[in-house]
Length: 90
Image (cartoon, rainbow, N blue to C red; front, side, top):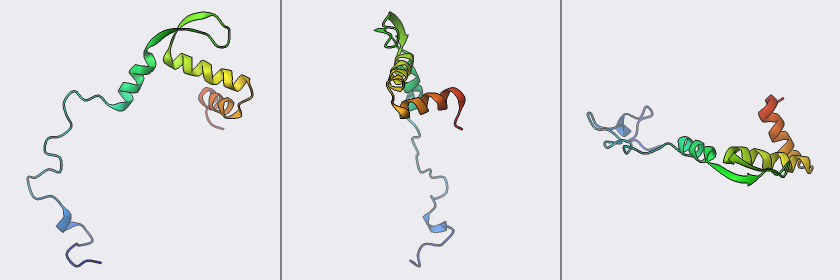
């Protein structure tokens, strides 16, 4: 172990009145979760893969229908994902 660094980190701390991030987070920067929620809420005209009817659905609904279609074809991972979301993990 080096002698110039103490276990409690005193020598590695910032100097008084000096921040590790002086400019902070850029203003107007969106969080990733907020960006993803926005993308999932966008609507698109598409065919319902379960019924075959043309519908206006959100991207989130289209993804859910695609997972359901995979589960109906026998994909056990898709089935487990649907059941976990619907009823919680058991």
